[in-house]
Structure formats: C-alpha cells, structure tokens
Length: 99
Image 1 (spheres, rainbow, N blue to C red):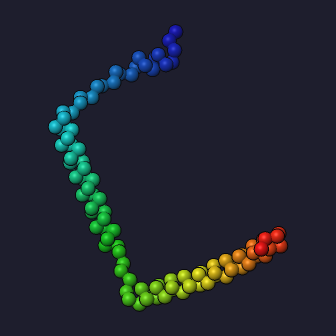
Image 2 (image 1 turned 180 degrees about the vertical axis):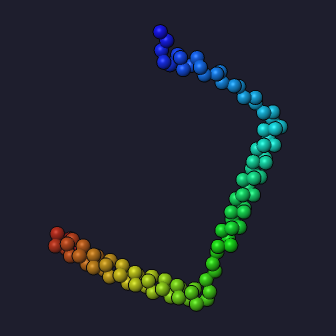
Image 3 (image 1 turned 135 degrees about the vertical axis):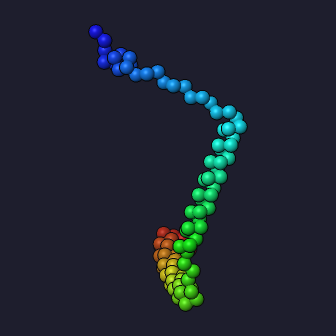
C-alpha cells in the first residue's frame, strides 16, 4: 500500500528547467530595467514636487517669531533650572563637609 506522500509525488510532473539567458540579453534586460526604475522614480519626484507649497512672507515671519520666542523661553527655563540645581548641589556638598 502506497503512502499518501508517494501517491502525490507520482501525479506531479517533473519540474521544467529554465534556460539561462545569454550574457548580452541579461545585460540588456538589466539596463532597460534600471532605466524603467529611474524614469518611474523621476516621475514620482515630479508628482511630489507639484504638491509642494511655498509659504508666503507673512507665514515665514509668523513662524520665525514663534520659533525665536520659544527658543528664548526654553533658554530662560533651562537657565533657571540649572541655577536652582547648582545651588541645591552646592548646599548638599557644603553640608557634607565640602567647602
């Protein structure tokens, strides 16, 4: 009595062997494939560049002002926090016997 695996293998045809392309055909296919990929990439870039929106002067001035104010406030905040922690560490070291 045959097993299920051997019966299944008997019904399956032998795999076909692929014919290897010639060196010149392989090179030409590679070049045309690369060219197709490059042209597709460039068309995608062009499509994305059409979606680009350039801000007007008023928007640039507004965002620049917001950035400058935010940088100033964060700088002030970190100065105060650094000053506070340096005083606390200084007091702790002084109480532990430092000078």
